[in-house]
Length: 99
Image 1: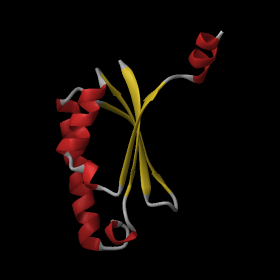
Image 2: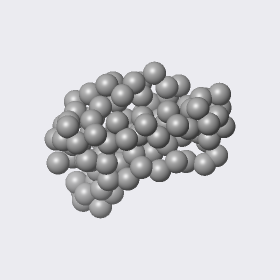
Image 3: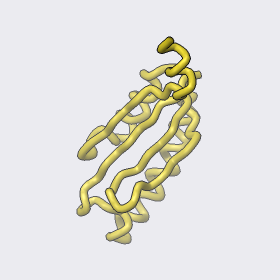
């Protein structure tokens, strides 16, 4: 399966660490995202908060890009300020193919 990197940014006003209601909502949102990812056959390999930029990074493994897009759309992550989706290619593989 192919790996995908997703970087999502949110505004300062939407930061779950500032508002307890938003934090509770974010915890529920994350649990529901894990459930939906399994249902879509998307494996979350890594999920990191990027300080201090109000972004988070996820490394995903999925059968295709559409499964990742479905996860992002169904979870409403595309409504954030910025979402970046990248196909991940190991650097060694990229360098070998460049010859």
